[in-house]
Image 1 (cartoon, rainbow, N blue to C red):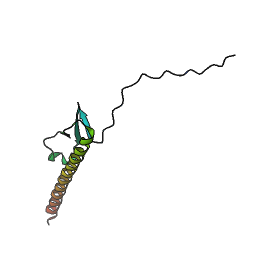
Image 2: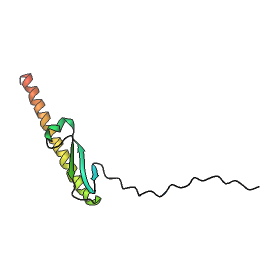
Image 3: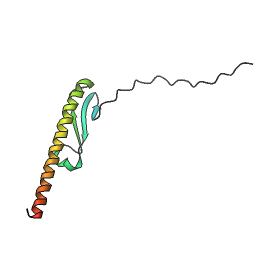
Image 4: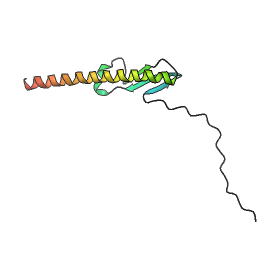
Length: 102
């Protein structure tokens, strides 16, 4: 009596190679790479030229040089947000001091 072989499912057709995952805040539009960040609501007034998001071209379609530019853009963005938040805090402190009669 022959031994029955278990059926093996057919392998799926070869798929396209999956693209490498891009670093956080790096996005691709067509072939070009971009820095993209959502603007925090408390500092949106400091980004009047943008609508909710900042998109900045990294000037290349190649990932390695784009990583360098991404670090630059991310740092500039964070510094701008920090400065806007500092200004907001100073305004609030000044307003509270005026209300308290200081």
